[in-house]
Image 1 (cartoon, protein in one colour):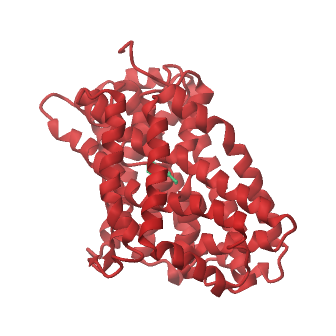
Image 2 (cartoon, helix red, strand yellow; image 1 turned 60 degrees about the vertical axis):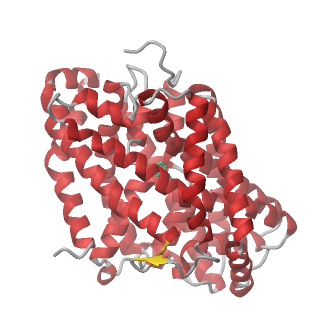
Image 3 (cartoon, rainbow, N blue to C red; image 1 turned 90 degrees about the horizontal axis):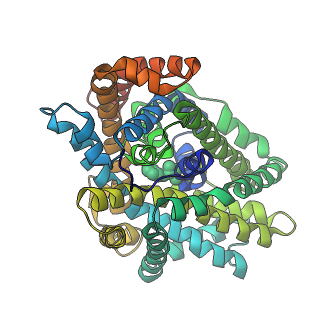
Length: 451
Ligand code: PHE
C-alpha cells in the first residue's frame, strides 16, 4: 500500500463522507421532482427495488475495488485487471466524463439553492400561491447572469475545499451538519402532514398505479438509484480507496443506503402533501421543490427562519455530494497524471465552468437550443443518469463478478472479515455476476426503446 496517500482517518469519518456523497440535491431536489413527473408511488416502488437489489451490491463492489486497488478510478482498473485486458479502464474514463456532466447541471441547481437562502431572508419566496412561487423561480432561472454567477460561487467554494485534500477538507465539512438537516426535514413533514388535504399527497406517494410504470419510468427510476447512491462512475470506488483496511464495507454501504433512502422519503413526505394541499402541480419538474418547500414554511410560525435554515442546510448537503464528484476527477488528474492537487482542483473547476455555461443558460437564453429534443440541462442529466451510470454499473458488476471476484476468491472473502460479512460478500458476488447486470441491461435497453 502506498504510504503517502491521503485517506479517511477514522471509520466514522469514512461513513460520514460516503453518506455526504450520497445525500444531496438528489434527495431534496431530484427525488421529489422525478417522483412527481413519473406518476408517484409506482415510480417509488421501482426506485426502491433498484436501490436495494442493484444499488447496494454495486456500492459494496465499488468500495471493495477501491480499497483493494488504492488508486484513482482509472488506475484501479488497470491495477486489478489482467495485463492483457486493458479495456476495463474505460469504466474509469466514463466516470471522469460522467462526473463533469453531472457537475455541469448539479452546480447550477446548487446555485439555485444558494440564491434561495437570500430569497428566504428577503421574504420574496414566502408565498403559498403557486402562481407567485412559479414567477419567482422562473425569473431566477431565466436570468443568464444570476444563473452563471451563482454557479460560479458554488464552484469557487467547493473547489477551495477540495484543494485542501481528503481528510482535512471533506471529512471536516461533512461530518457535522447532516443530523441537523434530518431534523429540519422531520419538522417539515409534521407541518405538511397536518395541512388540510394532505391525504391526497400521501396517496400519490404510496398507493401505486401500476399502469404508470412504463419502460421509460423504469429507466428513470434505475438512473435515479445510481445517481442517489453516487454509483456507476467511480465515486464510491475513489472513496473506497481512502477507506482503512479494517472498515466493514458491507455495513457501511448498508447504513448509507438506508440513511439516504430515509432522507429521500422524508423529502417526499414533506413535499407531496403540500403539493396537493396548496394546489401545486406534482409534475412541475425541477421547480417543484423550490415552490412547495417555501409554501410549507410560509404556513407555519417562524417560517422565514426555518426556511432560511433549510436552504442553508441543503446547500451544505450539496457540498458533500459535489466534493465526491470533484474527487473522482481530481484524483485522476493528480494521481494518474501527476498534477499537484491544487492545480488538479483548479483544472477540474475550469472544465466544469465551461461545461456549466450551456446548462446554466438552458432555462433562459439558450432554452431553444436542443439536442434529441432536450435542452442542455436535461441532456446532461439524461446522458449521465440514464446512460453513463447504468452502463458503468453493468461494467463494474461484470468486472467484480467475473474478474476481481474470480481471481482470488478465498483472499477476497478473507478480506471481508467476520463470517457474517463473508456471507454478504459471497451474495454480492452472486448478485453482480448474474442478477444485477442482466437486470440493468434489460431496464436500460427497454427504457431506450430497444425491444
Ligand atoms: N448522490 C448525490 C446526490 O444525490 C449526487 C451524486 C451523483 C454524487 C453521482 C456523486 C456521484 O445528491
